[in-house]
Amino acid sequence: MAKFLYDWDSVGFALAFKNYNIALHQPHPPGYILYVAIGKSVNYFFNDPNFSMIFINIILSVLTVILIYFLAKNMFSRNVALIASFIFVFNPFFWFYGEIASVYLSGAFFATLIAYTSYLVLQGNTKLIYLSAAFLGIAGGFRQELIFFMFPLWLFCIFYKIRDYKKIIAAFLMLIASVMVWFIPTIYLAGGYESYSIHSQTLLFTCFSNFSVFFGGSINSHLMMDSLVITWSILGMGIISSFILILYLFLNLKKIFKLDFIKKTKVIFLILWIIPAILFNLLIYIAKPGYILIYLPAFVLIVAYVISKFSINLNKIFKKIPKKYFALILVFICILSGIIQFTNPSQGTQSGIVDYGVIKTSDNDMEIINYAVENFSSNETLLFFSSENNWRRSIYYHPDYESYSYYSRLKAGKNYYGLRHYKNNLNSVSEAEIFYVDLDSNKKVVWLINNPDFLSQIKTEIGLNKMELPDGSMIYYSELNLQKKFQIYNFAFKIG
Image (cartoon, rainbow, N blue to C red; front, top):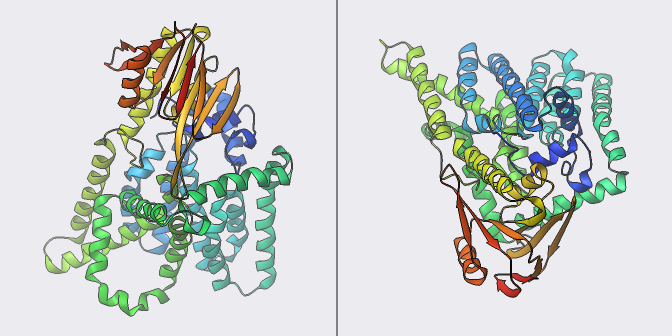
């Protein structure tokens, strides 16, 4: 598992355990107040926010697999339930988000919990209508979008079986009451509804406008977003699982075009689970692979059903071989594919690929920062980052060090630039065409950046020293014992 907090959001949650403030992104809007409350409680025992959040994710992972088993057993059969459970345990995205401090596994857990209790209502267990409503409402305290994405499925399940409108009204009242459990404290801690609304809408519309054409994004940005949704959905299911599903669909094109299958309640149930979330991701926004965890369990159920069907079909062709052996072979291949996909690391980038290599790279980045801090004192050193995540994590683990971080954003099809500055527990951010950075000539600058051209220009202008670490990594730094002005890219540096 990750040794350090993984990214910007992880740090926000860790800070929220001490001081809940969405204006400071502790955590970022819309607040996740129930997740923070549980995290804070667990952290009381461990006193390690990173481990506390991973511990929560491990528990959620176990519970999610158990729920998938019982849901699949109720929907299909025990064999399908076993297939779905084993495949999901080794699912690369599910595996990845269980190894880092993040909130996304709560999406998989609550989506499956809501789906399971709603399906039991669909089967005729009307007593669970209130429990399913409560789970749907409470889920918003972990990930607010769950209410909107899972509401159509919940609505279908209660109206399909229940004709007692008093019970339906009571269920809606239960839903509202469970939403208020987290919404009222969130509003109170945010300083009132107006303040909460401003912070939430500012973040949401800023994000939406980067990609969605419906919020001012360019067509190219929107198409790039859609390609990410498709890519992450395929990688999220697992490459072999996706191939099996696509092959099954191809072999059953005639049935699919007839659309008779859509009339089945199980098919409607799965469609209502998948479509709202995936449509939002395709039309409005997706930022990380973790977003697909909301509907990934539904995909796994479908894959498990398809594997079961394939096994029966293969048994008809090769009658001497029991169908369970075909199922075991297909499951083994899917599991092996998931293991290889997760443990055969990419190049260690965090550009949408999720595997062990990304976790390792993230930890190595933090190790380099720690080495830099050990070798340079805070009163004589300034840290300069090209990664917002590393800058944010550095502030959390080493708050005594002044630091800068630059970034670029794609907005309405155009790149714009920003600069973050941290000093004496205060953050500032500026956006402009050119940034003026004043450097103290009595200090050193440690350049924690991954741009060779930038480092080359630094070497030319003021000189660049390097320090080799035990693992072979390099720390680059400059002595600022001079007075000079120079410009690199969008930064006009002034020393002294």
